[in-house]
Length: 178
Image (cartoon, rainbow, N blue to C red; front, top):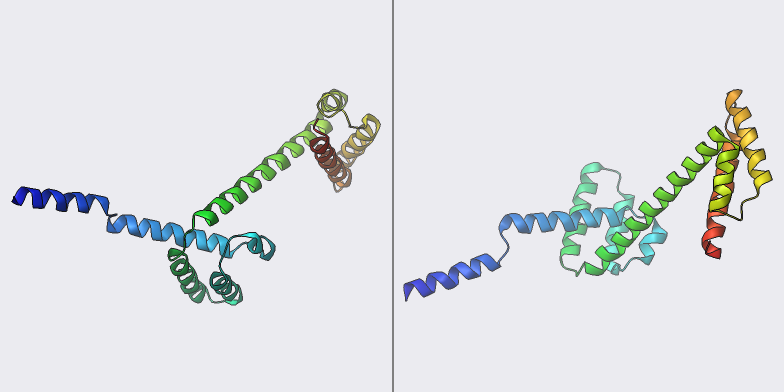
């Protein structure tokens, strides 16, 4: 009979999270709260955040003292522990993925710009085959000017213009499904 008592007690103990696990969960929720608190106002408005939490976040934005800000983040974490944060975690993960995609796209465009400036016509032909909407003459002019600016050690005005043109081409190709 005593063995049955000890067995059920052991099962109850295994099902409950340990103190360390509770601390890890609490720290993760607080970190999520800090991440949400640093979002721009426009993005914060789109997140599934209750009014009380929005007020705490607004207060944190007015705080200048590092220690006071740390305490405010703890308060935000406390509020978030009372909430079901699944929707917020999903929304933040989607935001992170979107930011990563934008970063990858940005780096890809930078690589194309650098390749165009270094290789010239072969790179223009390769880009033209990838993005049929590209204007070969405009690309050639931008690449030539960017090369000249680099040789003269001038500010890369044409390089930036080439990047903007590539970005616009990429956006147009995504809209048209190329």
